[in-house]
Length: 328
Image (cartoon, helix red, strand yellow):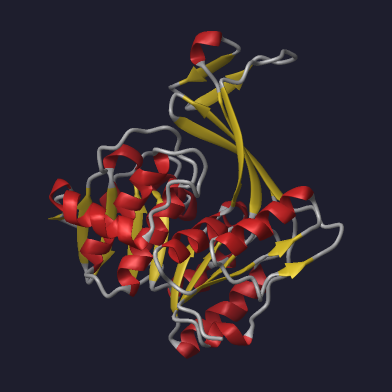
């Protein structure tokens, strides 16, 4: 069966809770950008919920809601949340024919701590062995993210496949890539149609600890080979590099409840705009509206827009987002 998009990467159970600064026990060092919790104490949690997540999973749900025929390849165990995962993917009409159950497997898990509207994430990833499948040769778009340990051989195979087949590859490097040297995934960057990163991820890819402006980061990422670069920068909005030009899109002024899955919502909105043959500058609006809707709800999936909702956002609010070309 042919799909519009195939997303590949680990899914997880996301535990999400918020800490109230008025209750103490937690301190923020703004100079070092470090969050400190009181040791050997019980800390009251102001808000709590859990959700199925993971970058590739979130993007799969986002694209399915926007009308794309979507398949998702991952691994799952037999914990209680695996049943929750399977049920949610079925309800969202995300195909799992390429996914594999591994009994007694420890599925991925994360805890997101929200403090002053920003999050810190604790992550556990199990080692999964992804391999090329025949379905990768028929899908129109591949999205890769949240690949855990032992990713190197799969990325080499995938790089060769994308290069030979001219597949549209969208790639969002994740934690385990940043733990390794750039050389371990540089070939995949070189064949990307779309590289999705936030500003901090860009600095990790380039091994730059000091503050760098967007232009400098974009120029250094361009040298790695991706054709188009989409970079988000929190409240500063999003940037698109394409055809040797750099564009900026502001954020959409929407109430913020939490930011889990905002980057994935942006990626799925942008890729849907691309799939529906919108100019890439308009695809920026799709991503921005999708991300704005998600941060107004709990968890990474609740606020994801459906196609008719996206169409309404575009009709009613497009003038709110003035996209400008900026000097590179």
